[in-house]
Length: 307
Image 1 (cartoon, rainbow, N blue to C red):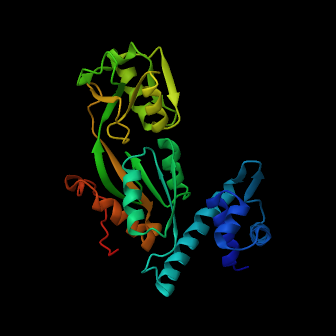
Image 2: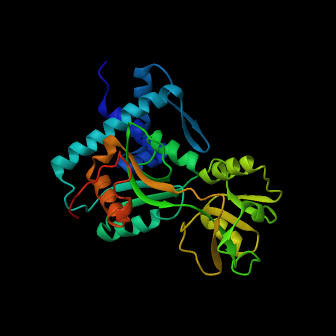
């Protein structure tokens, strides 16, 4: 039996939005319509694609395979409608952006919002592992991710290059030093992002290499929370330089053993990257980019579009 386009679209939006009710609101139909479409698709496939639970829906293994196809169908459908109806005015639309640090994501979103104030933006901060997984599993339109892995299915654009630093309260005993060592920091409470973050991986690997440990360690969910913890005197945070605009009362010091540069990329799946909405977001991101980083990534493709 030939698959029904509406069944695939309903299924794709349930996965993308996280619930049947959210998918219905997104598509402008009733929840019962979405439920019927998904049920019919599951009937045609012959197995369950979604597991309903208190916290939303979970995709089964077969469901994940069909979701990748369904999401590509939705992206192609959006491309067709852009050409038929035109998104030239950019007076509508919605884009889901994820990142593993507030900056430069918020700066880019601010620029894009100035250009296209009528486009709705969903933004979320996640640890590195979750963020890369969401792009890989097509659960977000755009990711702004440090050290994003290479993938034949992704477009990548270098946005900036940065390194790890220690964030200290201005009154901290180490705050007068331009550079500190991990050994210096190990004598204090160290604040790190949660497990799954790139920072955890980098710092843990370097500590093992040096035979160091951090007897007093606190893990936080996001960088803004880490900054607040530093201001409250809980400890010293390790994170990428210039990750936030929070500067009052906080000092950045280089870490001697963490001198490697880490590049932040804008990434999107290749089919979504062709959408006008994503092209304009990419253009807004690259317009604020340091020119010296523009050609550093061999997989980058620059789009030149008019607002």
